Length: 198
Image (tube, rainbow, N blue to C red; front, side, top):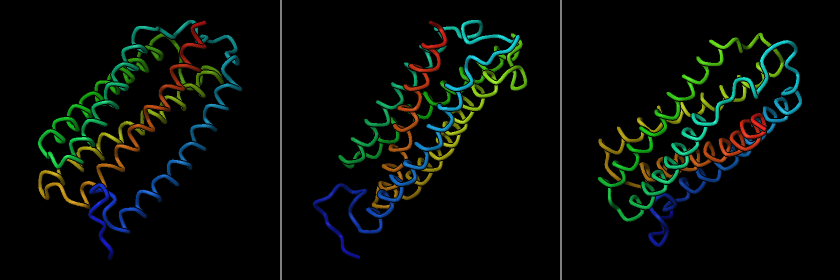
């Protein structure tokens, strides 16, 4: 296997480069998934029947908090990769830990938000709007949950094996995934929440 030491650690060998390319292809499939969920929501968001509307249940403050938290976690994830490329394992682990804590905080607010919706009478069965909203937000939340578990597994591997080509590659691919979730959330914030509050 050919090793090119002029490249960043995560790209050093051909297998790692293939993994990164493969993950970009996977993200392409994820774009199709979320595009389908967005199109479904945009088609159904006015179909509320006699149930609650977006304006009835959306509250700006928790959504702004979620957005700030997730954007900050994306920044700290970038700092973790920067530290990784400098060969600084400890700062990398710190920034990865902060990223995951912020992700958990985001998820906590989203779960509370779901609880509030249900308490106010908005459930999957309420209307087409409600079901499409819950599926879109729930799919994103499930991806964040998976990202948290994945990030914890990477941190455990970093602790055990140190910073090497394999752990660097996994960490970089995780960062692509985390930034992707951030971009999806920006679309949710802009076209679901802000549009619903207008």
